[in-house]
Amino acid sequence: MADNERTINNLVGIAVETYRLKDVFKRALRNADPGEKKKYMSQFNWFEKQVHAALKDMDIRVVDLSGQKYDPGMAVTPINLDDFDMDTGLIIDRMMEPVVMLGDQLIRTGTVILREEN
Image (tube, one colour):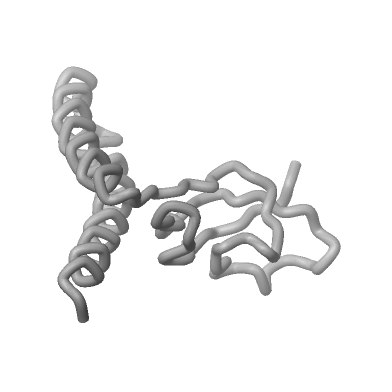
């Protein structure tokens, strides 16, 4: 494996884990004091900004499709698709793992939870 390919693979792993950590971090702070919550979220947002700057430097983008209408052609794997009828309109309720792009090239598909469209 070439050094550039290894670097990209490592950055993609960091991007996905940062995305997942943010979700866990938000859930952990739900019951925190508002002042503490703001302080910790500011620190996490700074960290996330640094990660995204490194990703951008390598032309890597993290794509969050939460809230969008689900289409079977999307670069995501729904973990609960079998819970719905084929003709049901579906929305991406939550991204478990984001889509990752390198320029215009798909590097990693996302994992999502769907819900019925209201």
